[in-house]
Amino acid sequence: MQSLTQSKFRAWLSRVEFDLIVVRLLGLAILVVAVMGVIGSIRNAYYTPEQWSDFVVFGISQGGVYALIALGYTLVYGILFMINFAHGDVFMVGSFVSFYAITRYRLHLLPASIYYRTQGITPTPELLAQAPVWTMMVGTVLVILLAMAACGFLNIIIERVAYKPLRNAPRIAALITAIGVSFFLEYFTALGFVFGPDYYTYIRPMPVMAWDIGGVAISN
Image 1 (tube, rainbow, N blue to C red):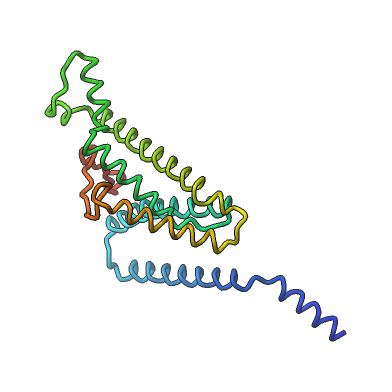
Image 2 (spheres, rainbow, N blue to C red; image 1 turned 180 degrees about the horizontal axis):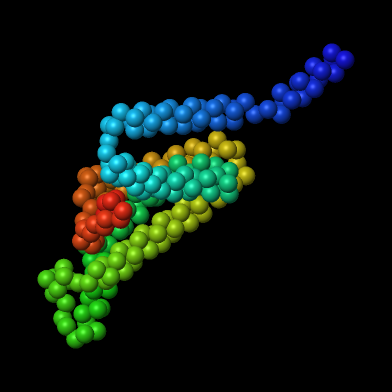
């Protein structure tokens, strides 16, 4: 009877994923600490209700960016069974594509230019600066679509050149290759004839607008 119990216990231990349990307990502990901190802040009135509303909106917007990046990692790992360390660098390339599309080629002003030309008006910089807001919004969507297309094309090249030849190779080979691709994108784009090593100020493609919804200030 005792040996039967021990065998059942060992079988149960073999099925238990202790690493998953540790990760979930750690996440639960972080959640408990965060909730206790929020409750303590509310009780002590450290922030006003308006500030809490701003925190919620800011948290949702920032969390959406993190969730998008995490979703990309999850999709790549679920399909290729590898961690694509170049994922963030591809995002960086997309940011620079949109930056130059706005600053050098003025793609965000293309709908406004077409709008004025359809009315028989020659678009000037002054008129383009006063264009209807909807033309700026359409131009911003065009810039985002261009950045998405550039990132997708770059991902296809990376997959065909770097990852596909290692599809049946050991995982350590694919892991090292992913790190190498990440370093290549970082240092190649830092060259002077590509993007350069300096920081750039991203110009807003549309004027700043603010909305007051239920006491919560939301701006673009």
